[in-house]
Length: 234
Image (cartoon, rainbow, N blue to C red; front, side):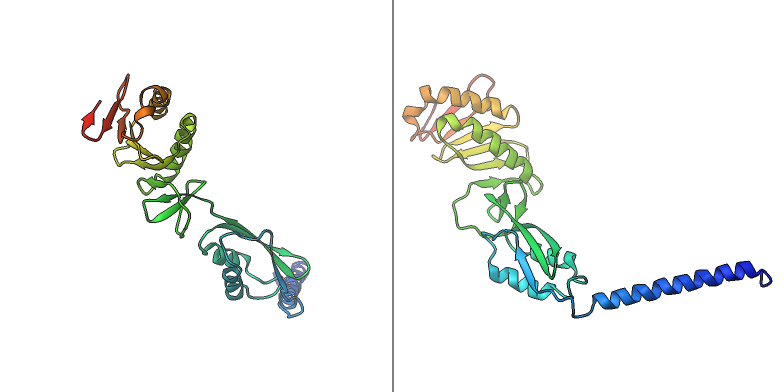
């Protein structure tokens, strides 16, 4: 091997090339970390409605380190997504010396098991809401299913000009809804939309006059339903 001058030259050239590349990489990393590339601005794509400017500023001051090239975008994103009401965040470099932040907030659809909130995607999140929201009750992994059923059943109720104030999905897979006038509808475990449609069709003719007295309607019958009033049963 040591007598093979061509091979030795090739190895020497290879080692020299690798050394040059390493030196250049080190130089580039050094230059990119120089204070001549400072981050001067953090720009929001749109002003959030639920997250305050003070909260965003605090996260930025804690998480943003380095300059335009060395800043850890993933760390900044994770810090912002930890804020209440923040669903997702996109962080990008914006030339010449800034960051562009796009914050997507949760849109609260309902309260979840009295302890959390559900957004319009059927995702549970922790936050406080002052407005009046319907109540969703269900198992830990059923929020998306309850959200979908809530939307479908509310559409069926449109002819009655009523909405669901509470929807419950029991561990035995049975559905129950409470309307905004206080009436409770037992829908059972199957054909919920068909049962509710039958109720909506009959309601104007058989129950509307006594709506204040009706407390619960059991729709879990094949060809009809039972109406429960205080002190009586029909």
